[in-house]
Length: 395
Ligand code: NAD
Image 1 (tube, rainbow, N blue to C red):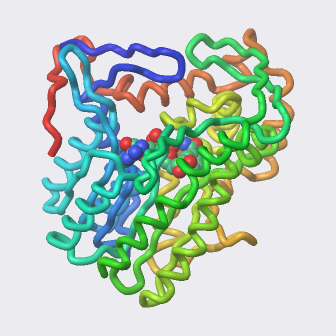
Image 2: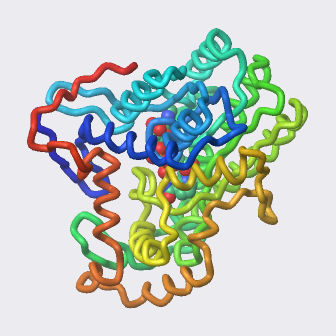
């Protein structure tokens, strides 16, 4: 099958297996180029391991620290005439590379919110790893079936209290327009907290603790975002921000649990805004990211997921370091994004961006190429005109 990108709004409905493998290899090469993260994690559970920050965490642990990893994700395999989702191909490429390096890598594809998936993961850890010393919680999901009530909660990205009007960009068509988003209802807020809040992270950690599968001193980290005030109504103060507050609440409970388990810790790392499948669905944010990329590339401080997680592991979590927490107890690798000079420049550019000057005032080209790369398109050395095999079995 010859696979080309098919972009529909903020998703691409195709993915290229060899392109995804080349993308994974770029991330592996980055970690190797930075040298060993030592001492680092050795037995790692990554929940949400197939794309974005979770995949970067898995690669950093494996190729920076020689860790054995169990990855959990929810991806669709190929079907007749249709390639699999990128996380499927990423995981196969990652697993091949890890095993070729002599390292343990196993995968569970399914719903991480379910009791059954937790049972499967616990069984595999008990049988193969004994205990884990790091749990990375990096899920981004539009819905969650609650394992106890069976209720399906759907998350939404809306402001809270008042409606919000701002600029946004259709990244596919390159059109800047004004969008107004009505405030979430109480039910929508509660549902978003149920999906993207911290209850499931706590369920995972409690299950691991009860099964005695946490090594003494084990750490756990989950990821969040704060960003600048231009995005606050839709992010920090919106439904997703309330869910992230709940993630922080859960983090404090898990931290207490891990402290009693040989002096471990749990915390939130606030990461940089980046093009991922999750962030491209948020109104307003892609325009902000396009401006941010231009400014951070010019300043020489631009990073992607892999650079962010390499910095988190090597300068805050491992290699003899401890996290430099902010006043709310969060690690910050969004520090370069939030530098005053960068944010002052965003505020200056924001009001004058239009459809006509989008290509000049922002790095929309960089946004688009990063977006396509998520699906394995635009990678050097891949022949996109050649036949490729889309039906690859999970390893
Ligand atoms: P992503 O969409 O790239 O990855 C999400 C992962 O979750 C994938 O591995 C997917 O398979 C998995 N997943 C989704 N639903 C699942 C389910 N039911 N069961 C099992 N696995 C499931 O997202 P991302 O942007 O890397 O986000 C990860 C975390 O990082 C989120 O908490 C997000 O809020 C946070 N974050 C993202 C950004 C950003 O700009 N992208 C910035 C800061 C923090």
